[in-house]
Structures are given as structure tokens and as C-alpha cells.
Image (tube, rainbow, N blue to C red; front, side):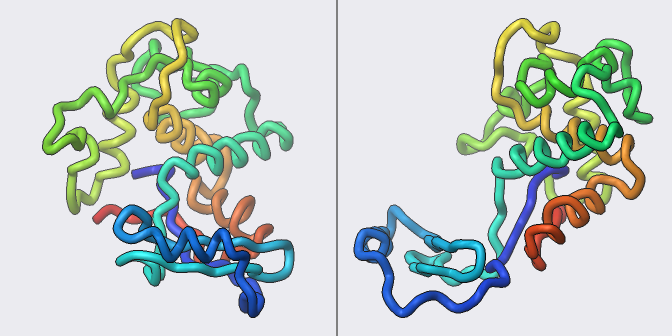
Length: 206
């Protein structure tokens, strides 16, 4: 799915010998409620590295909705460089825009979750998981996600705020069309390389 990002450990120095007591206590008390890794770092080194639960040593972590902030940061670099404008209708920058209705949505509305797009959370659920997220091993999965998100809208733009993964999926596709190299290259050039995140990349379909 476009916009979902995974990362392994940052390329920083080894953690300090001592770990702040509250973080150590949190990690120790986490199982089974807490599973993962608690990292605290400054600009040059890891200050604390506590692991808990079954996934504490996982080499790769999906960022999930953190990818929304990443896409927003990339979008603002494009705005700063004049590659797109916040109030551009996405049809102006997106070669694949499917309908005039969605083409009138602006970059600003996507960033603010006020675009009124279809919402994956509204698809039928299996064991509490919307069907949108249960697709597996389809070569065109990213395109399928964009097709769903760029389909019939729920409501006119600016009607109301609604937290929506489709806003980020469409934004990533718009950015990939507006700027040479595509979204994956933008992620590498404007986020991963400047921050030294050597393992940062778009997640692949399962």
C-alpha cells in the first residue's frame, strides 16, 4: 500500500551503558501488553534501547500511520521547491486522476483530511479488519488501493474532517506524478538520505 513505510534500527552509535529507570521499568512490565522496542536518541547516539515482548528484536518495523507525517513532509518540500502548491487541484499534477470530481480535490484538503474521499474503514470487516487491508500478493496492489481511494467520494470536500488513509495514498500518488522519479525516490532523497535512515523504504505487498 502506498504510503506505508518500514524501518529497521537507525544507524547511530551503540546505546549508553545505563538506561533511564522509567523506560527500563516500562519495558520489563510490558509483556504481553507491550511488544516492541523503546529507543531514545539524540543527534549522534542511541541513549536507551529497551526491548519487550515477542517482537522486541524484530529487524523491520512498519511505520503505519507515521507515513502520513512522512508524506506531509515530502509534500511540503515539493511546495517549497515550487513543484506543486497547496491549493492546486490534484488534476493539475496527477496524470492518473480518474474523475473530475476527485480531480477538484486540493493538496491542502488531502493533508487536512477534509477531501471527502472513500474510506477503507468503511469496507466490510472480517474479525474487525476492513476488507481493504486483507488483500494479498496482488501485483497491482498499490494501483488497486489508489483505484479504491480515487473512486466515488463520500462527500464534497471541506464538509467535515475524517481521518482517512486514502488521503495519504492519493497524496503519495500525486507526489509521484508531480515530481520526477516517483514517490519511492522522493522518500529516499528527501527523508531517508538527509536523515541517514539507511533502511527506510516503502513496504512491499505481502
